Image 1 (cartoon, helix red, strand yellow):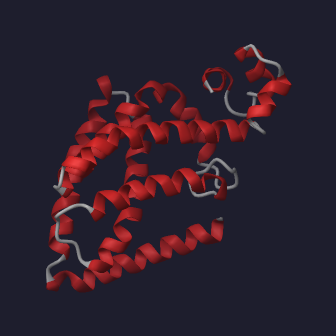
Image 2 (image 1 turned 90 degrees about the vertical axis):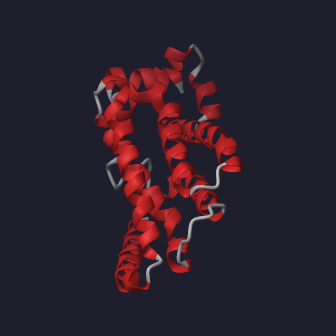
Length: 212
């Protein structure tokens, strides 16, 4: 995976072949294919690896912290602490993954294991919090938080501020706003707005299913 990331930075996705990756890693092409059936499988393994790092980092926080806001802040900050070593490669990977027709895009069927694990993390975040969350919103909130975190990742990819301070500032501001909006959602006067928002979520899910 390290060899693949280095070549992706140097050559771009299309020009990076399994043969070149094998040569850079110092293994035979047959050996490389023994572990990864294709370049796409290798990059999916990288996604899985970074996601597992994030899940492990989040586990202690979710065990001890009951506040929704603090749980979400910790999960988001830890996401970028674990991704930090790969920032230089992230732009190339995003450029490729942004193509809806390629198996590496985050909504593709091939990405389902990593996507599902990530959504389950947000399910755990929501399930164990003491925040008052209406049941209909609680059911959809993990998926919404996953979409939110994907948006922050896109911002981070383009963030060239020292130590990505702008990303962490965005996390602080947006998590505070989300916490306030979720608190307001339990107000009976907000029920019509909440229903319309959840209908929009259903439309997004239908679009994802159609593209898959």
